[in-house]
Image (cartoon, rainbow, N blue to C red; front, side, top):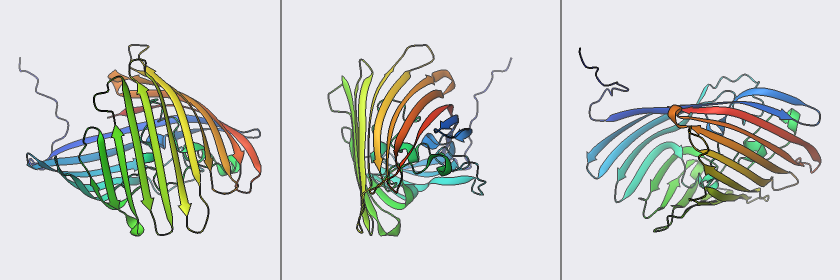
Length: 337
């Protein structure tokens, strides 16, 4: 009997580079309700959106490597959309289209559409493990249910919230868990960020900290996040703070804290629990206050995360008047490939 050969996944058209494909599908059912209205929708959970990508990597020499990355995101039916029932001609959105040159001792220089420096600082450290359910996007970012139903619900300004632009970016090598980056971005803006992952010689706790700053022509943005996890027990706590300061006045701010636990209670994989509280302010009369809780079960053998969570937010609209509270229940699954 002839032996079975190895499975073939991707064959590059160029033998001198290695090509990989990756992505995920993240779908959920969301129920949202106020005192007077409610609805149920099937959504793409863009807290960690469905996407696919191709990455090509090659080596110039043992110290220098190159990378080309193209990553597209499914655009339709987003959870954060203000009205996902509207038809949209935009099926996909470019997340990344970059070329990078890396030296193991000197860092990485990249050009193209990608995260600007410091852009993940406001969502860097969430040790609870439930960030795909609720995060620092707040009521207006995580769950943008129809404005007609829910009124004004506020989230953070997006100047440093997973911001992607055409940029020229440099990132330092990782030195004992510490790294930094700086970039020149669109519209003559620049940004910088730094992160710390772990403390040298400390194994009992995990520490993550991120900070980012962006300067635009007429505004500046700051975001800071941090988290601590006790590795033996799985208990954790994390938080985030950010603001955008406009030259003409107005300073939207947001902050959120979250406590969590991650451990193994079954053979499928780890389980994460998280509860959080936050306030998102539009810099004027509008404000949103949210409580949330979530559970994520990882199914290791199937590369799948199954989750469920609920939140309730109240506040005032842009005119300062009280608005109806919004209850959100969301359940779904993310499969990675």
